[in-house]
Image (cartoon, rainbow over all chains, first blue to last red; front, side, top):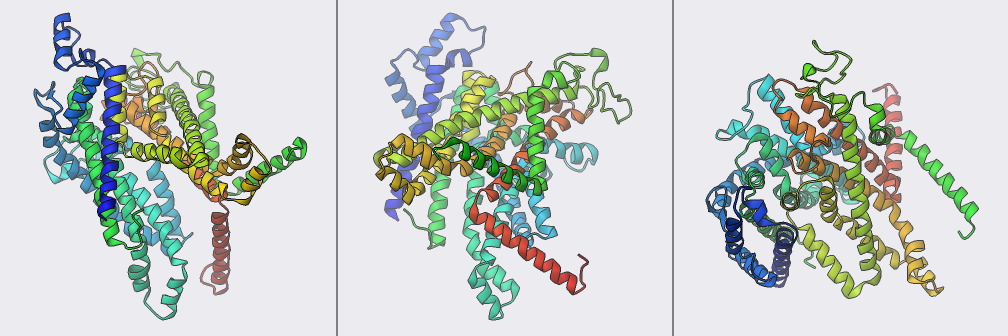
Length: 306
Length: 320
């Protein structure tokens, strides 16, 4: 176990190093941070002073070493837009994003289990076909579009929920539902097919033959065996949402989380804040990945760590 | 196989059999037809669209679709805030979607398959290093990193294609490597090697054909991912730039008018959803059809369903 965790930590280090290298190459070699961050009206002296301040006049190797040091100490400099340390902004906005993601993924998981079971009970039946078709439609919907449609229906026409912003639980409903759709569709389809496969196995027949109730066969035997796969996919969904789709949904609903902040940082040319956000998310993803793998190993003895 | 004519005939027959099977699955057929429609719209957009998608008519701003009060058939899907024809913009938007979707899948697929073949066939240290790169890059914060890169490089269609390809090749490498590893252990690859085939020939003639079905399903699924990603990035203003058109971009510009003109966000979004749905329907059919095990299961299910129906009708519970 210890060796495994060490290997995963090394892998996580490589991920953060890879992100560092890519961000460095893109921002310093292909892009021009000075032109990006300073207004067009900045004078040549101001530009030169700013370039010296962030170390652009040094050799590339030195620049990279400084950059890596900053990443390791989580010091991404001052946000030009907010005039305070970039990490401060990140920590301030992160909870709202985590709340939104938690609500969305929780909804998706809670709904996926009954839907998946209902579909798997009668493969090819009416409920099954309905669930699969709706699942495919859900997978095909762009989230920003679904968000706008929900705003149209619930906020503009029915006037029962707020269009955007945050503050009350009612503000959370539409963004969480929007963000929940894709994971819900994928989790339901996955659970359905895993259950159908599991129910065809001989041990289910045995359990039925010896007279166990359908509820027990289902809930205790079959569902337990597919649950690890289900939770693994849910963990993966968490990472996918964190890695990007929350930006879209937060933008549509003006939800004051990290994703909306990332887009605002881009629009204002605030490269330092954007870097801080990207690295925070990268490190979060690494930590979540390791935590999930270790947790699954503890729960399910069938998983090998190799 | 060295004789070309019978080989071609056999392939022709196989394609015909596949087409017949596709025709039996109505949903998959609808998906294929839908995709064909999008391709046609993309290629012949200037001929099909009633107006220039950029032509502004100040006098006809925010006209509703034809079937609503105030709309007329000169603009079937209405007009936007600059008086541009929504239908023409939706037709032209197919171009960006197809260009970027197909371009990214082709680029990422070629690179990923090459890496996967190399890793799987050479093995050893090369395999270790390449797969480590794949593992590491898969854990990157996808869309966020793309947004950062695009904002630094400057958004454009070319940037989007390159960046999306650079962040989507890993799946192809993984699937290819897995298939190569299992094909390598098979008797016929060993036989080909013993018979003295060069590595290139073994890969192209004996290993690649095994990859066609998993890779074509994967390519369609990746296409849906790319279309959705492009739409999202364009929606955020970092993808396709005006005056070019893109469905994601049109939803974004319609967003400000969502309270007065619902059709501006509805139709381009519907186009995205329909395209992705068609691709998904086709992919789920292909996945089952190209996999012998899945085919068997499908056959068994159909049989069981038929029996169940027959029994039900005998018992008089349900009419057939």
